Image (cartoon, rainbow, N blue to C red; front, top):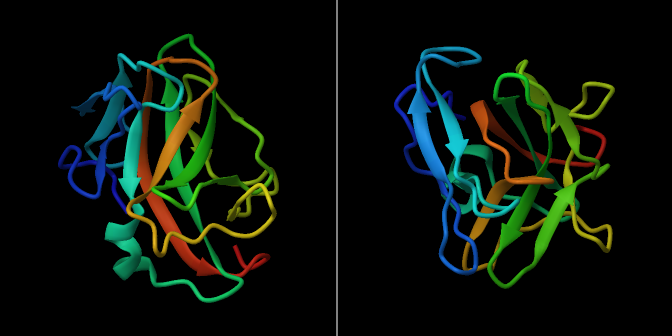
Length: 171
């Protein structure tokens, strides 16, 4: 869990494109959801480049998975003044593929703080692969959570949490 009061410390980082390009991730204190700090994501070279959370580094905190369990997450996001963006959290791995949030729709985020990673009924959703199985980061060379948007808009993030392990329906 991070409210980014101390900027962007591990396990958080700017994720790279295949060409090695990264977004600019700047700690801010003037636009926050709670606490005293948030992150401003700008200069994004692509829809997948924003911030990443190293899931393997936080498994010790949230617990390992057993068969039939998965991870879920929550992050508060805000577009820049007067802007609207669509965002979708993604779990990705090195060598084991990627997974999208169950329900998979993009969440519309305006210039008001919006919680992303929850369903319309306010329950948290698990991440699933295209074949319907739940995301499992074990055995991958790396595993992270990224925030994908439809474009390369700038945005703010705060209060990032990963929950798990959970069985479908317990989220």
